[in-house]
Image 1 (tube, rainbow, N blue to C red):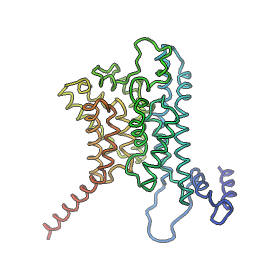
Image 2: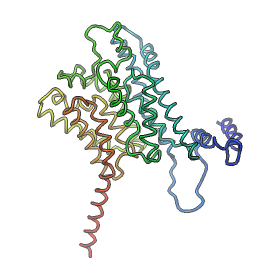
Image 3: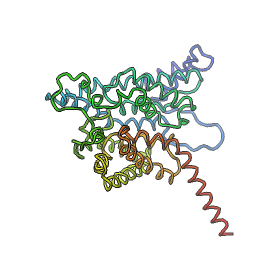
Image 4: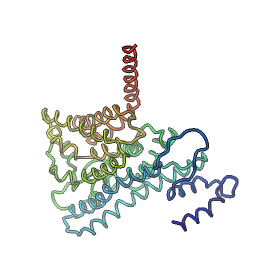
Length: 385
């Protein structure tokens, strides 16, 4: 690291204001602060200091996403060879999965960071670190056979329209990764739904074993059939689905990292699962169709529910800020996600719409929580007087 530090120190004078390459100051600053904590301090006023900055916060979230990414790579290979009826070793599955998944990750980061750097250079500001997480979230919520050009278009849309037009990191109304997924869902529905998009190579239909459809459990239930995958299979993740959303176990490992480090709100996670479970129980009592008859616990393990509850709903920018508001916000996400999933089978991934809807209402929830606190304090003051 000392050699790297010396290299950066030698380059730094050439990118400062007034130097030959001053236009690249934002790019240099982003690379320097990626490896080293900035040594700048305030000169006046009182400021709260923390041992962790935004870049380190984002890095922890990316670390928490690694279990879901690694399992998604393996599951991509597993589902591919299962569809072909072929036996394959662990490393063959990993190899096939890596060849399919890693290009999506590279395109997501390449396009997103490229746009972030461009905006920083034009504005003369520091490069914002928010896309370090969004760049990983976007691939994990997509089907594995999504064309790479669609990944690039959706990523550009999420960065420019979902974030930069609002002022950049910390100013966005909606979760940028969900904006990308919603864009693809409505712009290219044939690539985001159906039975053929979740397993690599299945779209060609060559050599697929008889009886293998590639349908997800949600797709089967929406068609009026009982899910063929058990709760245990859904929890472990050995089922078709988006790259990083199938394994609830891997997602919960990430949740443990976020909660232990204090990065993710456990209140939002718990209340989201509670809202979804309660809604599932109510539908179990009704039991009017196949989706209503899916076990409430099973609902929490299907589709992107767990992934959304842990990594999307807890986005500190687009979620609620007040402590009571977090309980309300999370509960409504879980409640609405299962409601959309059941009442509108055309949108079985109801968690996406539920989170985007509650992102919109998060400031309103916080407003009423704050106003309620003010009224209670004023009432106590009058009584004391």
